[in-house]
Image (cartoon, rainbow, N blue to C red):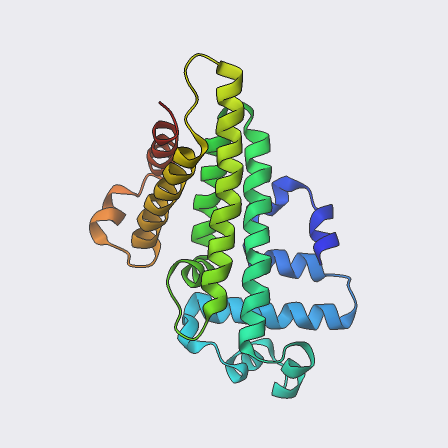
Length: 227
């Protein structure tokens, strides 16, 4: 499936929810690959509608329209499925945000933030697993920490390149950039969690204008990573 995903134009990745991506990437593949994707898509649907508390082997198989025995051909248990699902989802997030950033030219950070905002909303069930601690699912926390660590490395490297080009002031030390990036990322995730998970009515009221939300989140990153 990774080969099929890599062959897709970057623009298409940013427009898909992860279940759609799985369906497209597995299309035309051998039956076993399609069935594996079918089970993963079923898990995504359950996470989106019921949350992780509804994720059981029986519910996944019922949603996918296969027997319970079929599940165990592809996954030893639901923990392995979730681990693989979140690992692939993290890679999908990173690919989509990198592609958006590469297309942004003069507004790379804003383009990546837009992609994250859109992907967060379209895949809120999976994002909930990454951001909110799941009892009995340590794989989710590990996947989110990988996403944070790898994306922060990209952000810090980008800022350091910009500092090298500008050369007008002493550069911000790398450890300071990393602290800022972790703090800013946490602020953005908290904002989006309150908007899409908690559905805070006050926040919802002031977040109806998507471009205004994007402007706010982009401003946080721009100001926070600058002198």
